[in-house]
Amino acid sequence: MPGPFDDIRVIDFGRYIAGPFCAALLGDLGAEVIRVEKRGGREDRTLVSLAENDDGSPREGAMFLQMNRNKKSLTLDPMCEAGREVVRRLVRSADVVVANLPAETLKAMGLDYESVCAVNPRAILAVVSAFGMEGPYSARVGFDGVAQAMSGAVWFAGTPEQPVRAAAPWVDFGTASLLALGVASALRARDVTGRGQLVEGALLRTALTYFSPTLIEEEVLKINRQPTLNRSQTAGPSDIYKARDGWITVAVNGDPLFRRVARLIGATEWLADPRFASDKARGDNGEIISERVGQWVAERSSAEAITAFEAARVPAGPVNTPRDALNDPHIRGGDFFTEVDFPGIGKAPIAATPVKLHATPGEVRSRPPLLGEHTDQILRELGYSSAEIDALKQEGAV
Image (tube, rainbow, N blue to C red; front, top):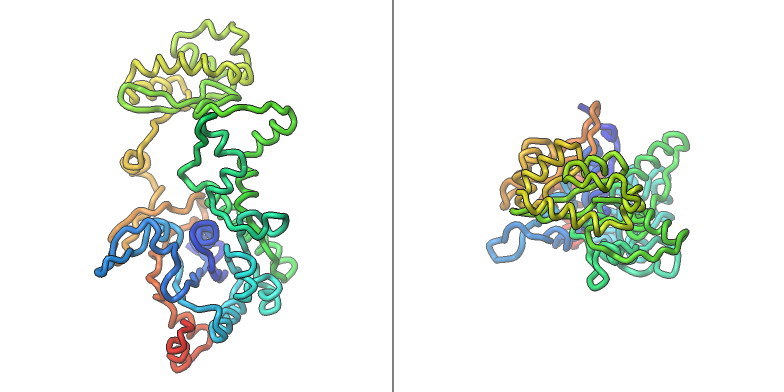
């Protein structure tokens, strides 16, 4: 079935997560995506390597497999004159150009918006920076963990003695998803105006957005909350508890769920206790609630506790290891992952399109590309002859 972006060409100059995953989402939904990388391969190709070459050098990694399904690969040196001409031809052929590179690098490659617009006024340039294109930090470099930390989320997730960074790069993935939304919106606007535009994402902007309720509360109330690790300070019980054979999480908001928990664990006296009369009161007295719920959970296995919570219609689940998650029957039996077979690595599960369109679903149509696998094909489509392609290779441009 045709995807919503079947007639869209995306040129992906991105690296690591935010840019490449944005392009991958567009590719899942039908776009043709061309990944451009240097002749030796980008650093993100081998991060979290899954195999080695015969000489012991790392092969493609888990991050690369996840971010680069449904893409073609073109190797290119965009800094030489012949390479810059290839860039111009790519931009001329493109609907969307994705690049999460420093501003000075974009300008040197001819990928700043002024240069892109001069070559192709209909092109949409989607860029990601760490801190945004304006302000005192605009020239700084940064990764997901830096944005997590600067938003306040890392400090708040830990304890007063030890801040805790989330292992999952939620800022990168969130920025990629929001950038894809921006691109889709810009494509719709182009249908009306006939012109492309600059779409800008920033890691810090994403992190501040996702953590904004806590920031709003602090600005208005000046409450200066201190971190309490996994225990929520705004409702309860919402915490992680140790069972006889592992850990589980319970997440409760609102009076109906709280009443169910109180009855389940035999704490019905809580229902008339003013300390637990509202979400705010329960958050303020969460340590008392968590201690009592923790005692109840500790007397049971994880499965017994979760089954009891589910029977009472209280949100709860196991704290899985990565292996537990992969073995979970709901995850294993669902369509959360798609298996790809990559040369030299074998079969690996990659997360499928994270949002389901039931009439025009996203799909993984092709495995991630080998380095430069489609270089000749793409150059021919750009109008280069076989002799010209050979000359580009001899020059080191591709």
